[in-house]
Image 1 (spheres, rainbow, N blue to C red):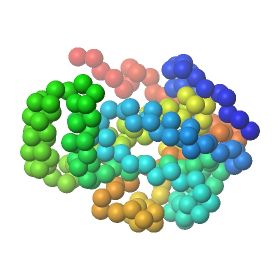
Image 2 (image 1 turned 90 degrees about the horizontal axis):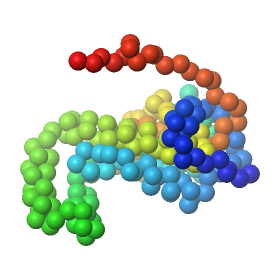
Image 3 (image 1 turned 135 degrees about the horizontal axis):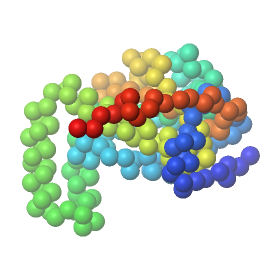
Length: 212
């Protein structure tokens, strides 16, 4: 089975996205296309461009079996999807700041002297920031990349479901990751829907927005 349903129509992408819980288990997204989806997702914004998100693509039978134990209430998504992407926030994300800004200098996006000044300012800022405040920042940023990931997947013709019901206290260690460093944000199942998702409604804007 091939997936040829791709779109550049933003209205169509956001309006056709649904939270799908049952997928075609025979369909697998190639690693090349999954990499492309992740690359598109990482164009999302982040605080001072730290890009603190980290992805664990769980697609093997062994990985899914392990995840099924951690997310028993979401078994259909885990077992039938092409993959489940675990999104984490990296508490050591600032270690990449110099590399990120140096790349910007190399590409001519940032003068070297400005980069050095900004690095000094950020080193001072994050040196004084509490772990809790930093954690909140990277969780928000990882939420931004998660939404963009789902939209990127939809643009490729795939369906997704954001999952919050899983054992966050165990997932990092279960997959050999440092639980003190990697903060679990959400799981995102990805694949092709086996049945049409239920339609939902939204509150009207005049109920949820104010103009001053």
